[in-house]
Amino acid sequence: MISEFEALERLFETLTPLPGEQLPLADARGFYASEDVFAPADLPRFDHSAMDGYALRAADAGATLPVVGEQPAGPDRGLSLTPGAAVRIFTGAPLPAGAEGVVMQEDVDRSGDVITLRTAVKAGDFIRRQGGDVCTGQLVLRAGEPLTAARIGLLATLGFAAIKVHRRPGIALIGSGDELRSPGTPLAPGEIYESNTQLLAALLADQGFPTFSRVTTADDPDRIAASFKKAATGDVVVFTGGVSVGDHDHVPRLLLQHGVAIDFWRVAVKPGKPFLFGTSGSLAVFGLPGNPVSTFVTAVLFLLPALRHLAGASAQFARPRSLPAHAGRDLENPGDRPHYLRGQLDDGIFSPASLQESHGIAALAASNALARLAPHTRLAAGDPIRVIPLE
Image (cartoon, rainbow, N blue to C red):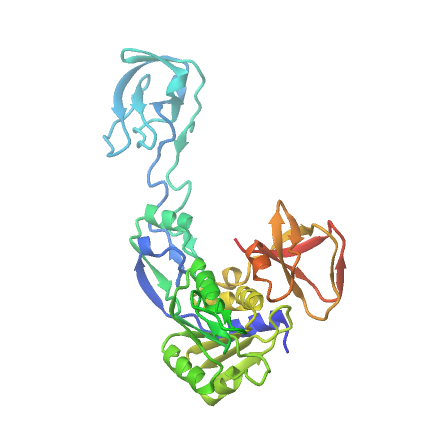
């Protein structure tokens, strides 16, 4: 059994980000850049006005000036200022030659084509200078950074119509268990509805990772093997259930029989100790526990970081994001594994759910954060604690 930190490092060391592909900028949200991107131009591209008002020379501030032209946003009309004159100008419009400042229209009295300034104007007032935001050649996107809305907006402003990103992995989900039935069908005594593959598919989709296959099979070696053979056409196969040490947990043995090299099996976390990771060539295989909360927690801690790494995320963006918080009440973990508590994070205060057992799906559904409680630890209300936000 290895630590959670060693498990993450081994995932990142073993898996190689998928190749790059060119995507239209409009389709790139949530992907990760596969190369550094540098600005091909300055931003702003030219000196322009930050306000609706009048462009003038600083020496003419306070005077009564004739308005000799108008420059709206759009094509540069090539206007120039002579001493003792002003040009009507609008937000985003290029500055006339010779203009040193802009006075807001609210600070001007205008009568016909003559204005009188009611405030002082200094050189540089309300002017956005060329290159004041971005300079030509500046690094604007690092390889491994996600294409967020703001980054896409920056790239579009710079004129990019497409961007090179890492391909997203093709993911197949396999749930196993004799007791599992599809929701909506009648249940016999001892049977339950299968929820883990639906939980995982929704969690992965929320993170930008759609699944191409989702199946449920009985705890039968031949059926599990057949399902794995079909699923192995993608980049990632994720099992949920059948990976522990019981007589009906066939997945680890079958993976070995089908050429999967198991890198590790069991991680020192609660819930979710029987987490499995292996590879077969370029195929990554994960085995998650069967209890729904254990499935969810190990997916957040290990599966999602691995998928983000495969999709090209740098370590900063691949790892689970954690925040500082404070315990809302006394907490204790007498065990020898870190316990990831489910609960509510509200204004920096974490309050654990009442039920912390691995079957407690209702408590998980009511939670918006996981809090890591170290082994052999007792915290008092108000003590600091690290949390992973789930929303």
